[in-house]
Image 1 (cartoon, rainbow, N blue to C red):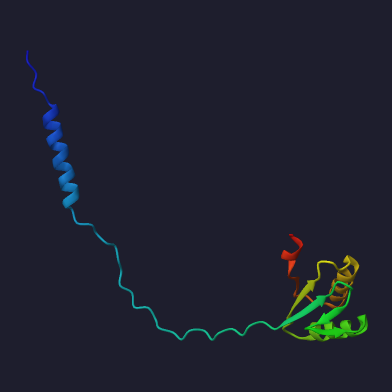
Image 2 (cartoon, rainbow, N blue to C red; image 1 turned 180 degrees about the vertical axis):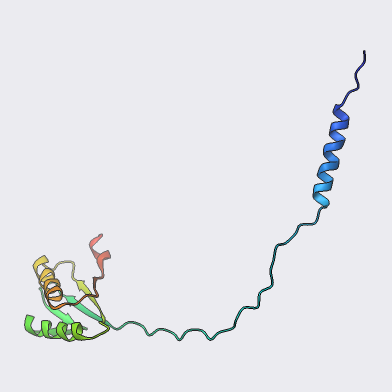
Length: 127
């Protein structure tokens, strides 16, 4: 008994199915919304930054001005700590300074209650 070859029929049917799929329009699911228009929030003020530099010989500078002794440094830190919105304190030690000088400044800040303190300029230690 001779059987009919179904391969060409299947090929034609697959081509027809592909053509049908291609011709179906793509549906975009979109919803039109009427969004409220509000005023943008006011720009935030940049934070107040206090920079404490510790020079290679242990000299402490407060925003570029030399602080002669530890008592005056702690008095300035007390002013910073007493503010409701404390300014950021950036501690920038020199690469060659002794660790005890930087540790003393950090200990004073912690004892007085300065909470927003961070060390900057750490990239100089990578070299």
